[in-house]
Amino acid sequence: MAKSKETFSKKEKEKLKAKKKKDKLLRSEERKANSGGGGLDSMMAYVDEFGRILDAPVDPSTRVEIDAESIEIGIPRREETDEDDAADT
Image 1 (tube, rainbow, N blue to C red):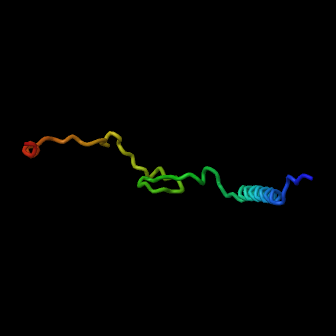
Image 2 (image 1 turned 180 degrees about the horizontal axis):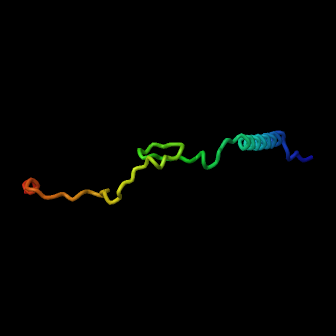
Image 3 (image 1 turned 45 degrees about the horizontal axis):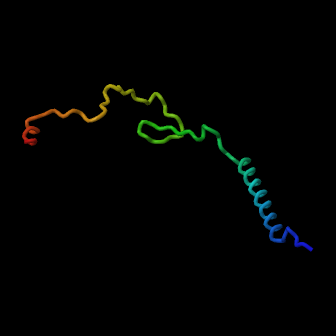
């Protein structure tokens, strides 16, 4: 007579695997049912003029208009003076 291909330990492993799969499926369904996610609006954040993160959008009437031409980008040119000439030599 040949030995059985399905031993006791194999059967137990199969049962445990099936049980874990079932539990995982139940947990995922429970998570989906209880999700309180409000969608995109609950994930949005707004930044005010001081860099603080807010939940609600900033009131546009409090915004200050800034002239883009008045902003200097880079290092301002250094004017040569007599002191600079004396320091170089």
